[in-house]
Each structure stands twice: as structure tokens, then as C-alpha cells.
Image (cartoon, rainbow, N blue to C red; front, top):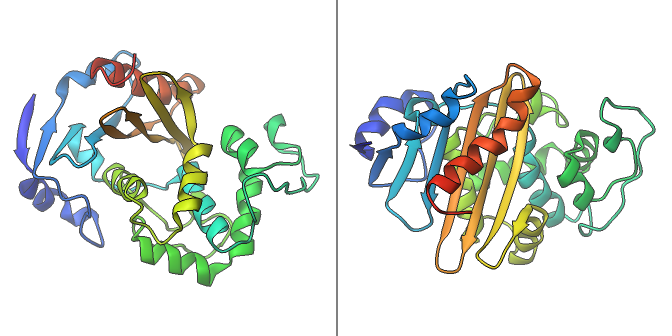
Length: 264
């Protein structure tokens, strides 16, 4: 376990960014012991964990934690917020009719609401929402929230999958921190709605929220855990080389969270 000054890490990794990292923590705690969870499956990746309002960020593979990648389906969190705020969809229960085009995943080939879409991560639904929002409003909210590198690229309905938008694991944490503090350009009602869409598990001890992402051999799992007296935010980013690696996004995350005694 190693502790570094955050200022030193900012100097080391500032070349990876077009703007400063917003989550300016005092101390980076390098958790080398988390490496065993990646090594067991021969997976390259990083994991970032922060307690809300703490001045310490816990990291495995700190260099990768500051590198930017396509957000893939983790952008559905932001896309949902924008779509509700701009009223292109009235609420999370509104049905958008399936366009009849068969995709590779059967669960996508049906009418959808935000509730079903977040569970099955249907791409076409959020492509339709992005087209309804439009480039001007989309860019406005991405800029205002300072999301990733803020670059949309040429296509309004694929920029989070193959466009120019990039975000680092540290920046994912920064976004989630703003979400939990209601420090985003969205109403509290819309933020609460989207949070409820992200629930993975709820027990007497905690509520567990998360969203996966996968594109171009890069996998994501980001989210947060709400306990009685504290809140923890996490971001995992890994290389995906086979189908088994896909399920390791959640499995590695939950092994780390259990090792930190955040979940059971």
C-alpha cells in the first residue's frame, strides 16, 4: 500500500487531459493488494474508490485511472438526465416503440421504457433520445457539467460509442460525486429518478447502484453504495478480450467492495 501526494499525480497525468481533474483529493492511496482480483483472471484494468466528502482516493493502477476512454453505456446515466431535463421524454415510464430492426440481443427487440432500458442497456433507445435532444442542447449540458473531454464528434447518436467523447475513471468518479451532491445542471427530481434506475441491490445495510459499459474491448462498471452514515463511489475500467471478461466487471468490483467491507 502506497500513499502519494495528489498534486504529484496531477503533474504526472495532466498530459492525458484537456482540462483539470475536478475531483481534487489531497491523497491518493495506492491499493496494490487489489491487483490479485485482476490477476486471477489475467485482466488489465483499474479501480477507483472514494468515500464521499473524503480527501483520500483509493486506486489500483493509478496511471490507467487518469486515462480517458469512450464512456460506452455509462453515458446512459448522463443521457437519461438530459432527456428528462429537456422533456424529450416525460418520465421513466414512457414507452418508446421498437423500430422493428432486429439487434443481436433479443431483450432489445421490443418496446422499451427507461426502466427496461437501463436494465438491458438497449442502445437504440438512447440513440433515439439523443436525436430528440439534438446536438446543441446535448453539447450545452456536456459543457455545463464538464463531462469528460466534452467532445461529441460528428454523430449525435453514436458519439459515446465511437465518437470523440472520452472520460477517465477519475472523471467518472467526479461526475458521480456531483450527482450525489446535486451539483449538476439538472433538477433534484430528475437526478432522483435516474438514481432509482441504477439500483442493483437494496438491503437493510446498504443500497447499491451501478451501470456497466462495453465498447471497443474496453469495459466499465461505475456506481455508488449508500450506507447509513456514508456513501462510496466506484469506477472500474478493464480490457475485455473474451466473453468471460464481460462478467468480470461486476465480479471484480464486488470482490473489492467486500474486501473493503462496504458490501457483504
